[in-house]
Image: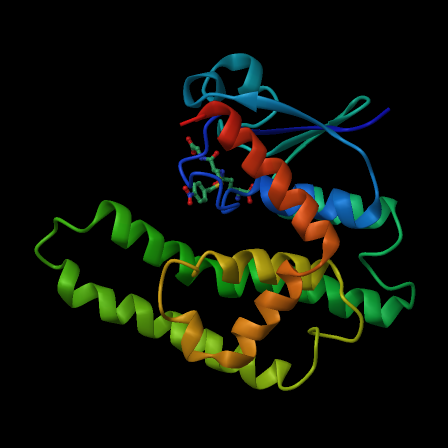
Length: 216
Ligand code: GTB
């Protein structure tokens, strides 16, 4: 049975692939697993039927037989564990790839999300102009360290892995800001991820949802 994921009926990013269903779609495309998508509105996400799948009333969710999952990182980890292609077979290399998955979500993503929250929700506060450079510099600190580690390698640890998949989706959240361009090593890394055929298929699928909902 093919899994079903949930995604925004109408993504606020207007099809830029920033919502977290994108990383799940990409993982499924990388491993060649067909999937269905159930689109949900903001109000449906908060209803009991959806909260039974996702305690926080969000997307994405993942249903496969009698398994229901939430949290994009856990979903990608599950997909990577069930199929070959996203985690190495060698036990130590696999553990390192998993460490990069955690690094993407717990070390790199938080300051990037903080910037998004500041720009979207804190712009009218009188301390916004003072806080913004602090938030941006926290991101710069992490990106500098990440760029240093990546160096001239294509991927974070040998072959492309679920660690790279998550890291690229996290870094893509900076697409609307100039910060990523300050780190050519990381811009090139994101471009390599986006050039993967599986990424393109996932991106096109989520864009098609937005285009269908907004034909003009
Ligand atoms: N930790 C969870 C995970 O990784 O799965 C976080 C899930 C989450 O934040 N889901 C968001 C959501 O459902 C969508 S992805 N929000 C609705 C709500 O909370 O009511 C976050 C997101 C949303 C929009 C943009 N955008 O427009 O650019 C980018 C990212």
